[in-house]
Amino acid sequence: MDPILLIPMVIIIVALFFYLGWMFNSKLGKKSLVASEEKAKQLITDAQKEANNIKREKLLEVKDEWYKKKLEFDHEVNQKRIKLANLEKQLTIREENIEKKFDIVIKKEKENRQFERELNEIKRSIDSKLLDVQKLESEQNIRLEKISGLTSEEAKKMLMENMVNQARIDSSHLIKEIYDQAKSESKKEAQKVIVQAIQRTAADHSIETTVSVVQIQNDEMKGRIIGKEGRNIRAFEAATGVDVIVDDTPEAVILSSFDQFRREVARVSLERLIADGRIHPARIEEVVEKVRHELEEEMVKEGENTILQLGLHNMHSELIKHIGKMKYRSSYGQNLLQHSIEVAYLTGIMASELGLDVILAKRSGLLHDIGKTVDKNVEGPHALIGYELTKKYKEHPIVINAVGSHHEDIEMEHPIAPLVQAADAISGSRPGARREPLEGYVKRLETLEALAKSFEGVAKTYAIQAGREIRVVVEQEKIDDVYADKLSHDIASKIESEMEYPGQIKVTVIREVRKISYAR
Image (cartoon, rainbow, N blue to C red; front, top):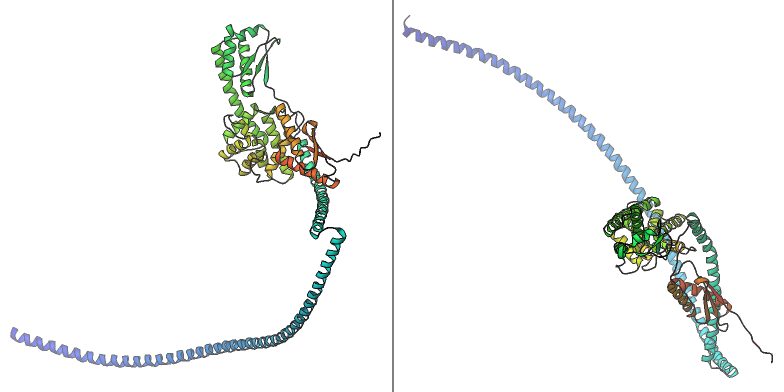
């Protein structure tokens, strides 16, 4: 076929197919459009129906909610109306009460004005009578002055003296009654506590001496101890600081020193040298140094054992060393460690009876004389030295105060402090517990007599029974029987506040009337 004819034919066929397709599509589109329109109308109808239904439901819900709110509002309004009605009623009642009170106040004011007028009249009457009385009193005073021969000032002075004397007698009676009552009540309890404490800690006392005796096998050993030209004994005395007395006492050498530690070092060293047999200066120095070191270690162990014995703990190691040193210290001949242990027990028992801290009480009692173990180059009272020492090693504040105040060098701040002071006095005042130098003893008796004689009306004073009793003879013209009781109490109080003494001092006031006449 001719290509020129084929192309038009193809074009015609394509155009025919395009036309047929267009006709088919237009018919299908019309049908689909109609169906879509119907479906849309149906959807719109359904939507309108559903919207109407929803609208009706929402209207019903709104009406229900509105009805509930209306009921709540009505209820609230009713409640407020009731409350307002009650308030109005209360206000009405208050107004009525205020009106009644106002009427009462007006009535009282009228009565007060009337009463004031009556008082003014009474006052004028009293003033008038007072003037009359003053005139009568003046006339009476003039008559009394003429009769008695005394002026008003002299009579007043005499009356005041009589009243003062009477008041003095009455106060003495009252003081005696109060003192007797307090004494009878407190003495029983105090005695009970102290006696129990003493009974539970009763122990034997031994007096420390200033010499130690070393037994030797025979008198030949004395020559070896002395050495050639005395070199051994000089070396021993230089190494120990102790005096060695070699005399005619058979089989004995005496070591003399006021320092117990040095004396103990010397005693042990000499016993070892005698047992060893080698006695010469070099050996003496070696043994003495070794013994001194051993005893220093023993002091620490002694301090630790004492702490364990008393059930104490957490104490600084330096304080434990000082406690061990107490074994080789003495106070008035009494061993310081035994004394401190006894004071600790006494203080603990009394603290237990009084409901106080027993551990702190024992700690305070044990450390109360710790200041006596410090180097003698440190000056000051041992209580204050002990105060600084315990404070330095961070002891409990109650313990620090008790140590510093047991001789009243500082103020006592806790009940344990006076317990330590009492226990110290109990331990030191036992028969045979302490020795007192003669000079101090005589001075104490003289001070005691002078203190008692400083009171007015005292004629003579006598310290008897080694200072445990002071007898006071008073002038019977100046001191009556009632005031004598008060005087004994005042003297005892002054002795307590101004003197230091072991145990207790009995104050006896003697008032006697002596009438003397002579047969000629």
